[in-house]
Image: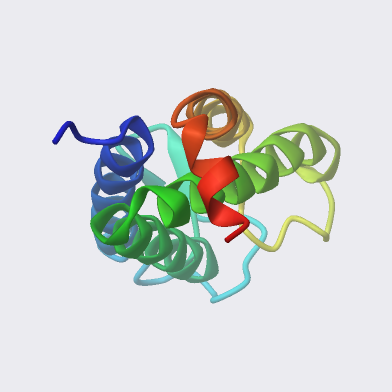
Length: 136
């Protein structure tokens, strides 16, 4: 039996986002939970504790879906991809405002857009036969 592309992407992205969420706490020790400016992860991605928690939750959702079944992975990839697409676009407009409760910066916006492209691309195009079986 071959591995579903959606399960593979969900598992890999999930593991990466959980790791990023955990590593983020190493650079946000003196940053307020919803501060509009945060610590720099890997020297370029701005994060605050709320942003770290968001990464942990997103990573957990992707991991759980990726380790369960292709239908769950497809739905999760598509949903999180759509949210990241929205966040990637909106982020450019809120970065310099008090609405920036995730301490987003330009590098974050491009990473969110890249994640959206991969997650949506796989979620919407791979495992096409799953949809017909999901209606049972």
